[in-house]
Image 1 (spheres, rainbow, N blue to C red):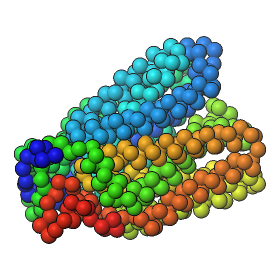
Image 2: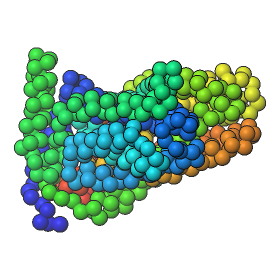
Image 3: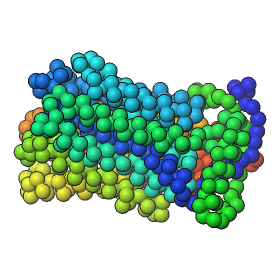
Image 4: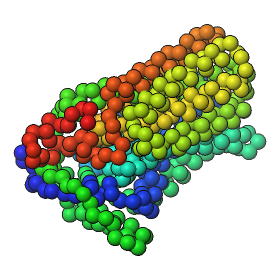
Amino acid sequence: MSQAEIGTITTQVPARLDRLPWSRFHWRVVIGLGSVWVLDGLEVTMVGNVAARLTEDGSGLDISAAQIGVAGAVYIVGACLGALFFGQLTDRLGRKKLFLWTLVLYLVATVATAFSFSPWYFFLCRFLTGAGIGGEYAAINSAIDELIPAKVRGRVDLVINGTYWLGSAAGSALSLVLLSTVLFPTALGWRLAFGFGAVLGICVLIVRRHVPESPRWLFIHGREEEAERIVRGIEERIEGEQGADLPAAEGSLTIRQRTAIPFREIAAVAFRTYPKRAVLCLALFVGQAFLYNGITFNLGVLLSSFYGVGAALAPLFIIFWALSNFAGPVVLGRFFDSVGRKPMIAMAYLGSALVTLPLAGVFLSEIGGLAAFMVLLVITFFLASSGASAAYLTVSEIFPMETRALAIAFFYAVGTAVGGIAGPLLFGTLIETGERVPVAIGFLVAAAVMALGGLAELVFGVRAEGRNLEDLATPLTAEEADGPEGADGPREDA
């Protein structure tokens, strides 16, 4: 381990980044990196909308409805494994390399999907597409939080994560056009749908090339001169925009630089030093994955089976629902920085769980019909979407910088594997019964899982609003002048 140490430095890079005012640079970060969520929302919704077309005669792909379900599971498995694989590479090789590599993988796999000719090939493409998206989550969330100023980190992160639903709405709207047999042949429309995702990805890649490596990652890995050059360049551009000098940064950090940090050390610190935070993140991720994947993958079928909404009209309802999900982080996001993480995250999880109770009642009793059901569904997910976005924000803030990408990958993978698979399977089975009582019970189970996430936040939540990332979790490489806290980590309730 000692041979990996290359020196000790004292730096103000974190303090300088956190005291920056909002600028064009930050907009570039948001557009270049945050767009991954739009791509994921587009992908998931697109496959759900084109599923029926793929099973039709003349689609050019001889695939059954059951195999479409397998493709969905394969995508999730790819996302989980991709997050874990690329997550540990992100901590080792840097944020920028990985957020470029994973986007390229997504682009290649998406283009390849458009040329699918058999189920096995379609499954392979969906696996690789999922791997690219899963890797994006780890690389992107770690980079965003390390580049965005502390005072607005919460609202920016929530809105960025919430843009998944803009992609979902766009996917539904696009499906209405591309799946029209009046405009496009049966075998062509769905292929163009996947091609559109690739075109959007290329635009993102062009912007992303100009987003720098995380200076925080650079100075820890012995590249302090490059980190200094990047930060100074950002400061000079902002001073040029404002026509005034920036205020002096306050505070510094002393660290032992390392070219490599053993995986066993990262894992030990992430899950032995911070066990309460680990429990918190698992509860948040499993709760949101269960609710969201259970409803998202089955909403069209639910509307059709119990409210008689035809396949042609279902995307319209999904667009309305998706936009309400985006509105949650946009409207509530600023309160996560002002009121605070702990009360707002708990409110989002517990509030959505409470609204699910009358939602189940309206569904069971059929009072108010489709209108009442949709209104309560919108309110439920208006709250839940902020909580779901905050799950990613939480895990990216409360673990040491050297473990950040891997921690995001781990909790995303476990939460998606547990909640993201169990939710769709449960709701799918209950909807298939054709009876309202079992489906209403499914809503109640989802409410209970979300409530557990809210309770975990009340007990183990961390007050992270406005605080420097290095204060929330001391870097593994930090040398503290006042004792061993740097090695053992700060208190978990810090």
